[in-house]
Figure 1: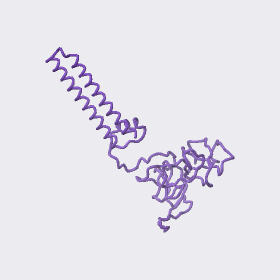
Figure 2: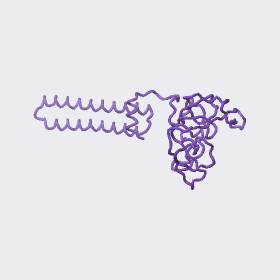
Figure 3: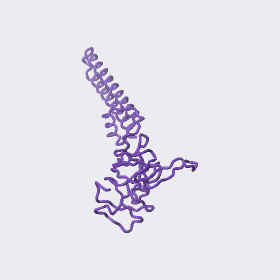
Figure 4: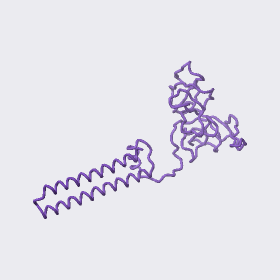
Length: 254
């Protein structure tokens, strides 16, 4: 089954890949793929597809073990029942078997996409595989099947959140400044520094203006020196505010 993509490029593969294998690039700049692994699920790149299903393809005879990879669209994907039965609409992530997916729950950070069919490990099973623990002992037998999945590699929307809730506008503002994800602690610390800088600057400015007005009232002849002192207070207030904002910028960016 193939929907949503008709023009796919071929990639080299480290070995022959079965149709439906979840793959990752061997490195960021590589044109070579290999079966994706559970420890590095965030590196999932796409799924190997049957080139006979493609209406148009770009082939390169120089590629070793040439395979076509879908990074979007709906294609058949190898899955297992390691994490339970899969229902239509469930999120799919990496299983303990390289290149094979499973049902995603709240623990995985990244998902491949959403299942477009069911798989209970009994019907439509292609075979079984054995999972072993660190000591090499068998701890689970799983069934493997092939089901259509709408591919959209992204952060798992079901993931358990352990972070402190941050207002959405503050989170977006922090991300815009830092150009990356920012922890809630940094966001709240930045707010505290900004607030303290503004308060200190306003207090100094208020005190300086008030003192200048009182001094002029008592000694009108000293306006020049009073205004000079007031200007220094204003510049100091602005400097404190600038330093505070710069500290916030560095806190978010670094």
